[in-house]
Image 1 (tube, helix red, strand yellow):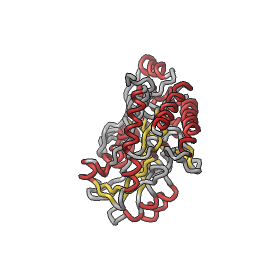
Image 2 (image 1 turned 120 degrees about the vertical axis):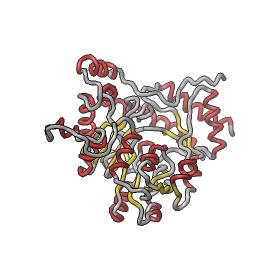
Image 3 (image 1 turned 135 degrees about the horizontal axis):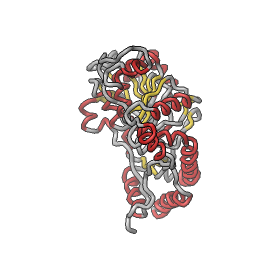
Image 4 (image 1 turned 90 degrees about the horizontal axis):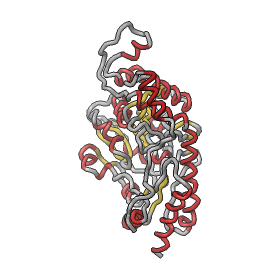
Length: 384
């Protein structure tokens, strides 16, 4: 057993048309900076496909979250409720604007923010609830948005993992005041580094454009709404290169093909591992009936941290890459500095130690899928 990885945990998606669009961007269009023709094509596709009010590509999912945090107009000391079981970007975006983080526990079935624990964490300083669609599965957005409405709060949906998923027939990313996508190489659709801000409340449109264009009204100028553009507010450069957008355009054209391929792998795993779950060896992902997921990841839950560590090591020795996921933010140095826990973190602490992610990427072969399943079966067989 060499331990050389034969089946990696992730491969960036590639359908074969991306480089031709990049070539067109460079050689034919001659516009490679931000907001070129391929960026506009991506905006139009995302808005039409997801029935989104307005979409703006950004340099990363992190940048989209930063824009969302700025648009929330938070003041130092304002509180933002979010799960601890998420990537640092979800939190950092709000720390940068001076907000205080309030960590609330997750549900054990979906690993999403527990909607029944939110209200107890709300104070007179709470301004925003941030949801995270873990594994491309939506939170209970109806309940969360109702809580936000009752308390006069904004909702930001971190749908970094949720492109092509739906909740009650609505696209993830469009379920809150503001939504955020990621097109990082680890996501279902990629432009290398990239993301998008989804604006679902039109009152944010103009300020979002100004933020994204270095604090200028340049977008209005190009639409002919002003005769010259100037610096009007604070902002930064959140525009990705049009070459990156050209790469993404190739993948959006094959969005259903990529989605179907990933769903096939997810379904194969789910069916194959059902006997192990029925025997009480491990737990499988849960998808609520009002959610349609995008097979962003497939995970299983082991008995405990020791078993998970052993499974990952066992798979590595047999050439299969597996990975745990987030170290909960509330227990991290920055989380301790910038946040507080309200209501306990029992579920987050317990479940984060058990979860292990399996290889899942566009283009996995039947042999790849079967090999991953066999490794997991063998691990539990040799443990008997």
